[in-house]
Amino acid sequence: MEKNSRIYVAGHRGLVGGAIERRLKAMGYENLITRTHKELDLTNQAAVFRFFEEEKPEYVVLAAAHVGGINANQTYPADFIYINSSIQCNVIKAAHDHKVKKLLFLGSSCIYPKLASQPMSEDALLTGPLETTNEAYAVAKIAGLEMCKFFKMQYGDDFISCMPTNLYGPGDNFNLESGHVMPALIRKFDDAKRKGDGSVTLWGTGKPMREFLYVDDMADACICLLEKYSGLQHVNIGTGKEISIKELAGLVKEIVGYEGEIRWDASMPDGTPRKLLNVDKLREIGFTEKVSLRDGIRRTYEWYLSQDEKDLKK
Ligand code: GDP
Image (cartoon, rainbow, N blue to C red):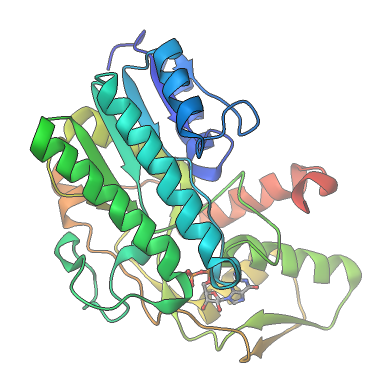
């Protein structure tokens, strides 16, 4: 990529897209193309094709997606499969038609089978049944990365894909119903500390294990792949380290400075028991993350405190 290449970051208002846009800007890329959801509805094929015709991007980072935590995924599966499938079909085909030089598609580690052996390598894809709480999202994402692979196989398009682990950081969704665990923990402990509540209730049993990557590290990993990788298979992006939800809750509680008790609501779903990525391939390509979990949580909490309450609780 040249510093004046036309790079379209789809989903720049989201957690990952926002981090990638910030990073590319900081590195001196001067021709970034972005559109808000309002300006361009990526589920509208005609609008997407028109946009590519007008803007002629040379590189595309497809970070736009309809995302949510365990509860949102379970409640609105039709929306998750329809919106995500439409976005990726439209953008990938438009990128092909307009001879985009390189496209990076972002998936998610929930694409792997529920009981895949851990840590999960790229080869675990499509080897068993999926976790039911996010099956609709996973099926759409699997179709997206397979689409990149097949466009590469049939037409030689340089379309690659990556599978990030659970991401967190500034710009995350702090809505308690639809968000993921990290922002939920930060918000719940912070609210309880302010109100002087004696306890905080978290979901499930606290036993599931999860891996977390700070979003700026994710952005750097994406840029590294754009620069160095053109393989057929997707690449896992993670740290290769995991922590139980219970331990994570303890860590967030300490960083926020909350001193009350933690209760577990076992009527809420645990989701998949473990979701650890094998990151050997990423290491071979030459990427290692920089931000520790403690540091990342601290930075995210600082960002959360700097935000206007009404913007966060939408
Ligand atoms: P997942 O990684 O797809 O399962 O999605 P989440 O990030 O939403 O949830 C991860 C784990 O954290 C699950 O085991 C949840 O039950 C647990 N968890 C505990 N408390 C919360 C909470 O307040 N919100 C969310 N989203 N998850 C929670």
